[in-house]
Amino acid sequence: MSFFSLPHFPPVDNAAEHRRRDYQIAGFTFVTTTICLTMDGFAPQFMQYVLALFGWLFLFAWLRGECKYVRTQVAVAVTFALIGEYFASVYMKGYIYRFGNVPAYVPAGHGLVYLTAVALGRSGLFQRHARRIALFVVAACGSWVAWGLSGYARLDVIGAVLFVVFLGYLFKGRSPMVYLGAFFITSWLEIVGTSAGTWAWAEIDPASHLPQGNPPSGVAAWYCLVDAVAIAGAGPLLQFLSKTALVLQRQRA
Image (tube, rainbow, N blue to C red; front, side, top):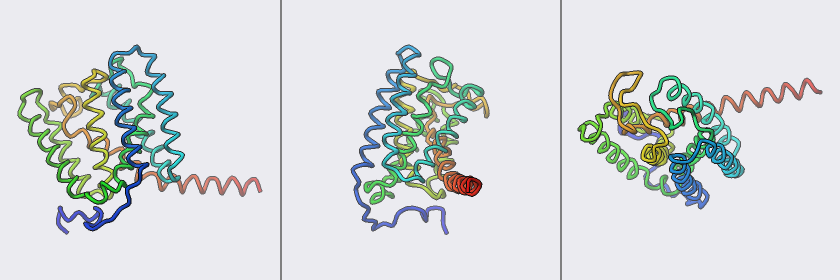
């Protein structure tokens, strides 16, 4: 089986249904992400808690219409991403938020971002045109990488490394449609967040000591890692919770 056989992509003649809810989730997250990150670029720190309150309210509202499996995926994604935020930002200083913290709205934001990647990936648009969208993403991200390596603005070697990782997720991963959805929403939020000054990536990556952009061009790869952990971890977590509930019921009986 060749690298470009795309075994986990939808079939070419896939006639997937266009569900309005999927596009509503995506549209909502793109708009609110823009508002939230732009506002946090200049607002006082207490505004982060206001944004967090609304973030959790909206996330729970959208999750009411999802199955238990997707809800569990979101829970795993939020937990893993939050740990990663403290490690990569607060401890490693790979990128730093404006106030040097992890903003209170970040956990709910990660939940909405993951749910948006799932919604886009399962949407009729992505299911019907998966290969065309993948080609566009590879071309767009590849052009971004080339621009970063040119050093025209800021040398971005880490972006090129992450781009290769992203290609691995896309062509060999078992959930390529989610990764395609993640590319769009995460690239957008990174561009908005860094442009607004909400956070900034270090010029030199503290782990590899290689130069990186602000944001790195292949930054979607980091979010794909979160998505992969959420997809892989949801099933075992559900089984564990079911077994635990069964044991507690037997003890009560």
